[in-house]
Amino acid sequence: VNIRSKRRTGSRTGSLKSEHGSDKSGSETSPRMHTSTGTSPGHKQKVVLRKTRFSDDQEEARSTDTINVRGKSSDNLAREETETFYKDLLKTLETERERRWKAEQATRRLADVLKNVQAKGQETESMKNSAIEATTQLKQAVMNEHESNQILNNEIKKLQNEVRQLREGIEEAKRGEERSREALKAAEATLTSKDTEAMADRLHQNKKFQESQQRASAMSREVELLKHSLDATKIKLHQLQETLASREHHHREEMKNRYSLDSP
Image 1 (cartoon, rainbow, N blue to C red):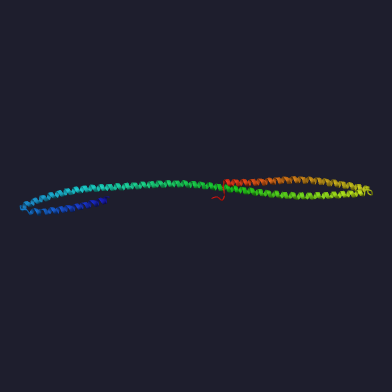
Image 2 (cartoon, rainbow, N blue to C red):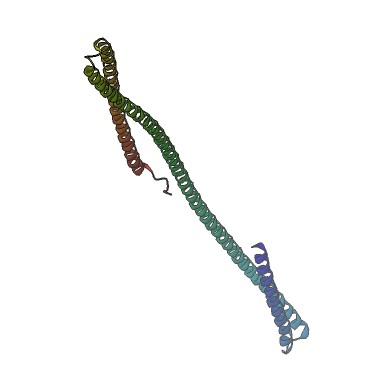
């Protein structure tokens, strides 16, 4: 602003000097015009000198007035330019402040969104972990149930083998009883010749028969016990199967309601 004002004042002073020089040249021509009159040369020179001095004083006063006016106008222009510059600078600062405030607000909103996303991600991860843990526990429970079923099946097979062996023993006892009966019949046929021997043999056969009956009754009781044990084992196996099916159904319903492992 100072450089512009100096340039303007310099140009204005140069123009004033040129105007002053032109006025002086005009005033210098005026004595020649006055010398052409018919007065005396000495008197004419004095009059011309007075007029030139008066015109020079007027020109100087006029030039100083114009310089002061132009100087004041240049100061006003410089002040206006300075005020305009500062106003623009303040507007720019206000705009930058507003942009900064908006950027800070956007940054805060983005930070809040990021926190929410992280919280949701942690919640989703915890749900996935809980679902995986529940699935692992269910798999372990299913494996345990399968192992218990295998053990029960093996016990059932073992009991079935024992029942078959007992049945075979009962059949063998029946066959022995039949043989004993046949022997008794044969002994009765030979009673006439061998009464004493036949009686002893009969007693022996009766004793064997009683022993066979006792063994058969004991075996039948064991068979009944094995049947009851087999029925209880079958009931227990059925209950275990129903429990396993209900657990699997409950787990499927729970996994459908809670979370899916293949979900994003």
